[in-house]
Each structure stands twice: as C-alpha cells, then as structure tokens.
Amino acid sequence: MNEIRLTCPPRLDKESGSELFKRLRHEKVTEGQTLVLDFSETEFLDSLGGARLIEISDHLRRWGGQMRLENEHGDVAEFLKVITPALSVTSSIQPKEVEVLEKIGGTAITVGEEIWQFIDLCIDAIYWTVLGPLEGKGFRWGMLLDEMHEMGVRAIGIVCMMNFLLGLIIAMLSAKQVENYGVQILVADAMMIGFARELAAVMTAVVVAARTGAAIAAELATMKVQEEIDALRGMGLNVAQFLVAPKLLSMVLMLPCLWVLGLITSLSGGFVWGVFVLKFNFSVWYTETLNAAHFQDLLQGFLKTIAFAIAIALIGCHNGLRVTGGSRGVGLMTTRAVVMDIFVMICIDIVFATIFYYILG
Image: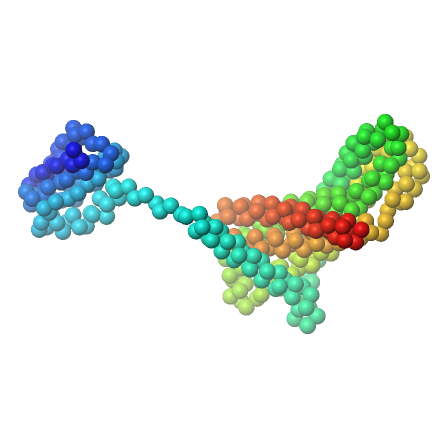
C-alpha cells in the first residue's frame, strides 16, 4: 500500500504524541509511502504535541516518505497552520537542474561583467597616472616613493638570487648538451640571447608577481573588507587616483630596473660556470657574451618588462577591489591575482614572440 493511516488521539500532547510516534515506527515505511494523519477526533494540540509531529515528519523524510493531514478543525487546525512550514520540509524538494545553455549564459555574463570592470579600472588608472598629473589634478608623489622602495629596492635580493641560480642552471645544462661538439663557448651566446629576450624578463616578472602582485591584491582586498575603500569614496576621493595610480607608476618604473639587474646576475651565473668549471679565459667569455648582445633582443626584453609591469599592477588592483567575504575572500583573491598574473604574462610573451619573430623578423 502507498498509504499508512493513523488516527490521532483526542488530546495530542507529549505522551500521546510519543505513543503515536511508536505506532508509526512499528509500521515499515518505504520510499514513496504517505502517512495520513486523521485529526477528526483531536480536540486539543499543544506545543509538545506539535514537536512530536515534527519528529514524525523527520522520521518519514529519512525513509523517503511523506505526510498528509486530514480532517483538522477548530483550534487544532489553527495550530497546525502555524507549524505547517516545519512539517513541509519533510518533502524532499529536488533542486532544479540548470540547463547547459543557462550555465553557459550565466558564465558569459559573469565574465563579461568582470572584463568591463577591468577595462574601467584600466581607463581610470591610465588617466590618473598620465593625464591627471599633466592637467594639474595632483599625484601622490610621497606614496610613489614608498611604493618604489617596497616594489623595487626590497625585491633586489630575491630577483638577483633567482636569476643568478637560473643562469647557472641554464649554463650547466647547455654546456652538457654541446660538450660532444666542442663548441661550449657558444653557451655564452645562448645565455645572452636567451636571457635578453625571454628568461630574465619572465623570471623577474614571476618573482615580482608572486611577491608584489600578491601584496597589492592583499592590501586592497583588506581595505575593501574593512570598508576603507567605501570610506575613501565617501570622502570624495577617487580610488584609482589615491591607490591605483601610484602602484601602477611605481611598477612601471621599477620592474625594468629589476630586469636589468636580473639580466646582469643571470649572465654572471653563466660566467661562473664558464670560467670556473669550463675553464674559459675571462676575456674570451666576456667578449663572446658582448658580441651576442643585439639591440633587438634587448629591446624585446625591455618592452616585455613594461607590459608585464602594467599587467601585474592592474591585475593585483582589480582582484583586490573585487573581493567579497572576509579573510577567506582576501586569501582567494590574492591567490587568484598571482595565477592571473602568470597566465597573462605567458599570453603577453606569446604576442611579443609572434611580433618579433614572424612580423619584424
């Protein structure tokens, strides 16, 4: 049978409700069955009796059953109306399955809104970094110096160490590959070309993205969570002018300087391996390195660094200003900023490689 019928006692309180529950537990409720409670004889129902009804509904829900009330009247009917929401949760409501096109549309709208927010931030940041100061609207030069010290001076150690170690590794592996051909001196050429075009710029940018890009996102996200951003807007201050522009200009000024130091230290790593391990004369290795230096390779690395700097600063600010939630949201946006930085840098690298090798080459 698909129904189990039980008649409620004239007085439904704690004791009689417990007896009703015991009668139900003796019944073998199967999935899809309906319990019909007949209230035709019930004249009294108190809160403890209502609690027993809720326990009965929970029991039915666990076994996949449902509940239906019949013949309620008078004060009992009024009381049942009050507790009906608690009883209705027993019916397992299946969430509506989202269609594929609906998912695609929702994702497209979300991505479109974020792209528009990023474009709006870029326009504001470029205006307050370049045009605003030229029009006499002011710039936070004091904050610029602080940001240059934080982004540039304090990053010199880690940038130089990482590039030096990478240069040492590349020289070591390259020398081993050409050992059988007796042209190990060409390792100096490969070091100059590789690091001038690609490796120094990419390694420096990755280190700065992990260090400074994450710090930018975390700083602005914390300000957003603590409602400091809203306070600035309430004071009539432009967020892009007050916070974003100094960070953007500082990054554009300092990352090329770090790239130069990274290039020098990476070549120094190759020099250490070439002179002290491969036993080349210092002047020979030095001359071979300089002869491999070409303006187009250096220009490519420099322009990449400028593009990387703009991307790191704007992506960090964008993610920081979009944070939602509390401390967990700050952590998620910080991680997201670093991941987006590295992804965008790879995309920028592809664009530059295409331009210099297939269009200008």
